[in-house]
Every structure is written in C-alpha cells, then in structure tokens.
Amino acid sequence: MGRLSTHVLDTARGKPAAGVKIWLYRVSGNAHKKVAEVVTNSDGRTDAPLLSGEALKAGTYELVFFAGDYLRETGQATGDVLFLNEIPIRFGVPDAEQHYHVPLLISPFAYSTYRGS
Image (cartoon, rainbow, N blue to C red; front, side, top):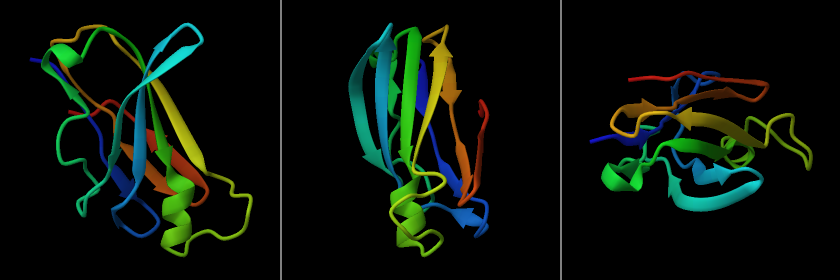
C-alpha cells in the first residue's frame, strides 16, 4: 500500500521543527482540493501518514508549509513581511502503490526538499 508522509527540519537550529502547520491539496489543473491539514509533532513529523492506502491516488499534489508562523514563534523572524512565509511544494505521484516522503528543510532565508524514503 502506498503512502505519503513528510517531516520538517529546522536547519538553522539543527533540530526538528515542531508545531509547523501543513495543508495538503490534490491539484487538478487550476483547481485545488484540500485533503489534509496537520501539525508537526515534537519530532518534526506528522503523527500519521498524510494519505495512505486507497486515499492516495496517482496525480499532482501540493503541500503548503506555514513556515512563517513557525519562524516567528521560534524568534527567528519578525515583522509583517517575511522572506519565507508559506512554502508550497508541488509534486507528482505517478504510482500510488509507492511511498512518497516529501521533507522540508527550513531556515529563515532558505529551504530545500527532496524525495525521501
């Protein structure tokens, strides 16, 4: 059975990013349908996969990480306008039987992602 998971690491502080709000959308053309809303735990992970089994379908998805809220709460960013606020990551799931892990590594001025395992 396939599944989709994520986690967030704070590279500036060298530790998991706890309390990051994440929304997951299924994308079709210009239409977005929210399919999950979660918050990272103390290990920077979600308590369960974002999608698994028959809920995970082949197609395009977008994760939106509310990094600005986290950066403000941890004292790493201040002000009304942040360099990084909401970070969208759009990716494809060609085979719904596989595991797709989409981590986010963040700091106040940079982020990266990759397909993890």
